[in-house]
Image (tube, rainbow, N blue to C red; front, side, top):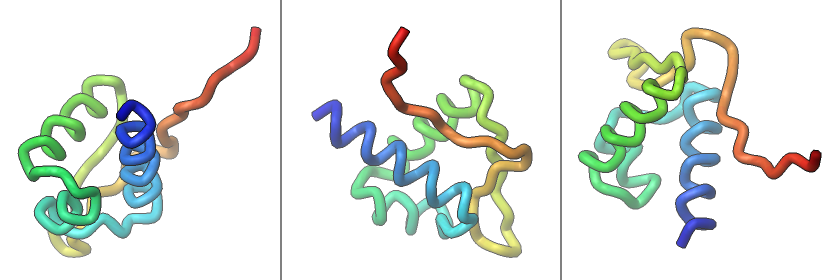
Length: 76
């Protein structure tokens, strides 16, 4: 279960970085989650510092500052 959550987050990050998410409803369908769940994920990402905005003209979410998620194990 955790792996599927992490995979969705990585896919969401990729779609945001490539500016190809589509509108909220379309993105939720692509990630196979509800719109409400997606809205909560985006809100939590913003709380963690992700600079996410939505472009109505391009119909996509995007990072307005360079960056992305990092979900990796780091050895000490």
